[in-house]
Length: 405
Image 1 (spheres, one colour):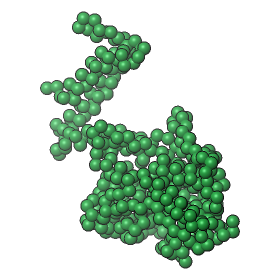
Image 2 (image 1 turned 30 degrees about the vertical axis):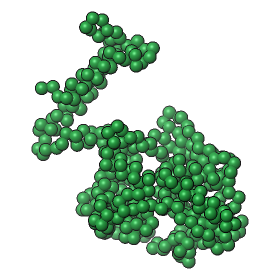
Image 3 (image 1 turned 60 degrees about the vertical axis):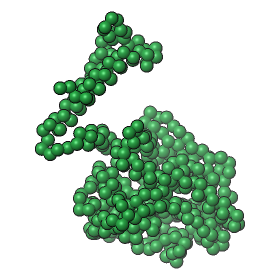
Image 4 (image 1 turned 180 degrees about the vertical axis):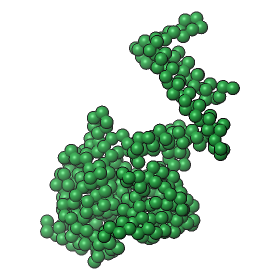
């Protein structure tokens, strides 16, 4: 019996042969006479190669369904083949997303989801690493830190190439528990391995927090760059400006990044007329993001650390290269590539690395990070931010720099 896939493939090829001349515009590919379709030999060979490729895929799929010891759903096999197609790229940021995974990703960019409140990535040696816990979430309260490695979730090992699977397990209904196994490398080189039981909750991310510090120095904390962050930032900046702000501190510590459109809108309000960043594809095509003449007219300090990644590094790099402010803290994470999220008709999607970004001075920081202008470490187990200013030596230094301007 000919399978449905086989029938569909034959139909597709016939349609391609019949209508390819029309679809290709001026390219001559063949013609129909009586009941026969005549095509040039090279075109026929190309179509046969295409058919053979899909025959192999169909054969293996059918072999698994007929002979594999354990029963496996046909749809799951097909989804797995799509995941494998992206996995072979060996890029932890490129992946095929099932409908559930795609919905989850979109939720995060909108600032609300259910889980433990953590941003993760993959290391070059295929480990899942914590980029940053989100402030005031279960992961943050449980003591997870930037640089922690997640080796297991609920007792199951997850290497980096199974990042999406691990994230799916860490998410779940509010009020339920998940066990995370952590490997932590301490400053003296020793390692700690321990389990943390974390209770999931509904997480609504407030990406902007702001207040006026001493001497009318404005402080804006950006936790991530989602769809509303630039709007909320402009509200905060306007509120501080109307209070006779004399300097501005933007806190990007433990900010894992987000949408390039959001961060470039924020940079546009700060930098004046300049290049903010540009992206470049494999074939050298560039897309520039520029700011206009409008800029703030007070001294500015950007706080950064090892948890500042991606979009955070776009803003930090633009400020540093244009001399618009001072970077204070430690070297950033080092993610200088851009992913495009593409939805598919059935609700699934593809996340694909399509370009790398550069700072105004043509620097790509992927795998390198951005060095601060003023290096100062925050001691371990020390809280940070205006509520903990007595301990936060980085924030103290930022205030001192603005006072000297």
